Length: 287
Image 1 (tube, rainbow, N blue to C red):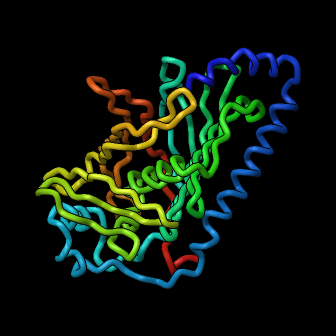
Image 2 (spheres, one colour):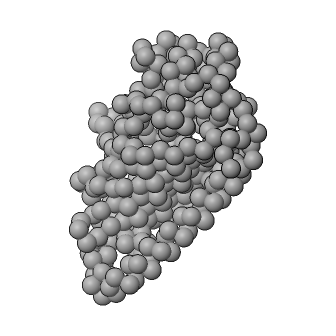
Image 3 (cartoon, one colour):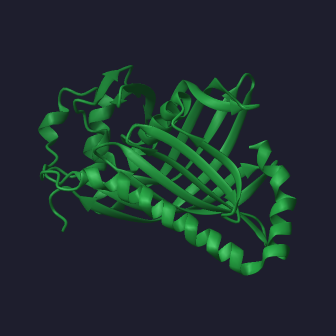
C-alpha cells in the first residue's frame, strides 16, 4: 500500500489541471467496468433451482457449526442466490485510517464477489478500489480519482487464493453459502472451533472458524494468506473478527467487523467496517 502515497500529489495536480470533467469521465468509466464485472459475477447464478434449508441436515455437522446454522438460519428458508451489501468503514493507508464507502456483490454459487470502494484521502482526493473474485480469478485495481492507476493485479495464483479466502471469510453475510456441499466441507476442531474447506476452479482454501456459546462466528483465522511486501507475496497469518449480529431477512448476520495481519509480536489491523444495508436475492424465488 505504500505505493499509493506517491500518487497523492499527482492526483491533486490532476484535479487542478484537468478539472471536474476528467474526474467525472473517469468515474463513469470506473462504474461501467464495475457493472460489467458484476454482470459476469451474477450471470452464472441465475436460474438455480429452488432449495430450502433443512435443520435435519445439521445433525452430522461439528457441534459449533450446527449451533451456528440453527442460530443464523430459519428452517425451511430458501437458499441465497446473491446479495448486495452497502458498507462504511476505515482503511489503514499511509499510516492513518482513511474513511471509505463501498458496495459489495456476492454470488453464492458459484462463489464470487466484487467489492467497489471509494476511499477519501482528503477533501479533494479520493481513491477508487475494486477487489474481486470472479470465475476463479482474483483481481485488485485502484485508481486515484478513478483516473490515475495505482494498482492493477489480475489472475495471479497468490491473488486467486487470497480472494477465495476473503470470500470464505465473509460468507457469514450470506450464511446459506456456508452450508456443506460438494465444494465446501466442515471438519471438527473442538467445541468452539471448526475448519471450513472450500474448493473452486481447482483452488482449495481452508479457514479456522471460531464460535461463541450462542453459536455466532466471532473470528476466522488462517496461518497463511498472501500479503504483498515490496512487490512480492509472502504467506502471513491473517484473522478476521465479526460482531454485532442482527436479523436481516430472517437470518442473523454480523454487521460489524475488522481484519488484520498477524506478524511476530505485532498485530496490523487494516480494515474496519459496518454494514449499512443488505439486499438478498433467493434462489428460485425472485424474478
